[in-house]
Image 1 (cartoon, rainbow, N blue to C red):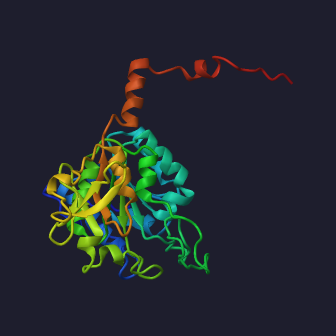
Image 2: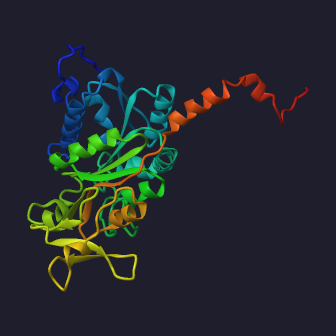
Length: 338
């Protein structure tokens, strides 16, 4: 990994780019995500010598090569485990996990679950293109029912995993969603994730131009985006539409959301739900929204607590360093005699 030494002058996005040729398919959404991460790093003025990008296997996993920081390109699905070890060894490091929907939610699903429930202070960025791109287009855990691929020629019969619902169910305390091409939205979301003390999980809807092109056009297309997306902000009403004329409210007497139009059928602005990012139940509702509901974008949930590695070190200070030999011989030991 190339780390270029420069002066203490203000770092620009290009200063976080390595000297390696970026090799993704032309038009791949990974380029936009790389640009957003480098911009976020520059705006945060991250110390490159204390920043680590960790990846598993897949198209997204090439990410560490393209950052002028430290990095590890690890094995399939195990990036969260490697990143946990890095953070425990040196809690002062700024550690990012770059993964995809296959790498992070299939073979790596178990590792992802446990790193989220442990609340290790990692920035976990999941690229979701609903397909296996590196291995030539097989369906992935997030692929929709009916997806035709080399491994599902007649269409997938499986119900997809929702990345954000998975993260919330695993106990994540920061869950957000954005889109590769929404740079003005994505960069602030990445900065919010970085500011969170504990495991932050960001799902990025990302286009695979070769094997699953335009799969999110019904959400991200310019002509439909205002009605197909709802940009959530803490403390602000859940409004969407070209003129913010539509909103979400609870169905009277039920724990369900419904789309209403302000000014129609007696609906007033006071009826619209206000986003509370500390409310896990509301985040669950927002994470599950799918057409004809708008897709929720932004920070769905943020409710920090002490991170795992901080508690580990605090426990060590409080209890003292144990004698390993004493621990091994403390109880339930046997002597094997020949």
